[in-house]
Image (cartoon, rainbow, N blue to C red; front, top):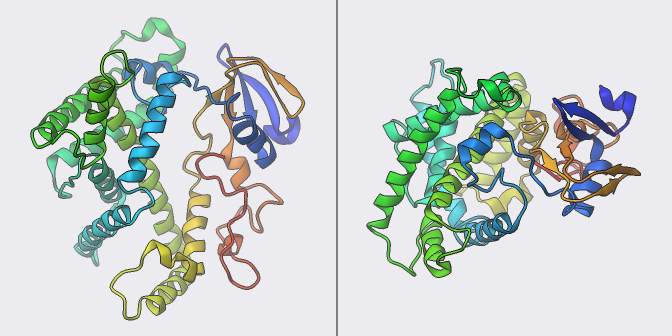
Length: 373
């Protein structure tokens, strides 16, 4: 491991671009929490940038438009369910559909990834549009298929080739498939937004898209809000929320299969607590330490964003005694924190004691940052 040789902060080149890799909780917190503004930039992956055409939010660079849209998203998602009972009800409702679908495969083999993608997509679309799709829906399956194909290409060698070799970008190579997929995704999303407008009442928002359209009319010309931005926003939120959820659930299923004793004890705790209740709620988590530890340990071991989202410095700055120039790519090595010695009782194994204290109560270590600091 390079950090063992060069320390928790070291530099390297990505092609001709200088980059600094951050390892360990101390370096991560100093950069992304204590000096968050200095490290809040987003280096632009050319393939993603060309696909988004300067739109979108999740991978957009730090600036006034990004700040406007981030503020809007946090406020709107909070009002339409994030952290509220309405969000919980949507999830519980989708879980009922998921369980019903899983029961259809009882006693037979299956690959649950597409099913998990579908469930995650439905929860996102309930928030964005106030609608859900049947799991056999052609629209839903098309979205999932196109996102999976594009993600594999963008994050693979063809994405790197596109980024580093300008002269090949017009060639009929596999990365052209991403542009074709993106056009289809935009066309489908525009159709959904236009259909949504037919039932919309201005000033009476029902969901995220209604709120955005109200905001667009209020702000008027010259704002960073426009309908093209809305299309990319919807696609960004969908793509960011499906793979992460699906892969985490797959990891949990894998380890529960490999460790049936964990599965049995978790089920026992759920059964005891659910006695006389129809469903468990988010508030019940404090009375279910073993189940909560299992969920968090699954997230830790899944390690679904090992290098997080690349950042960049917005100005000349310092980190742990090193001078870092403006515009330097910053790579937060989250894997180094999720398996850091001294932060975890069992850093390299699936063990629920990483989240349970000596009294068997749930405790979340400071180093639990599966997405970012």
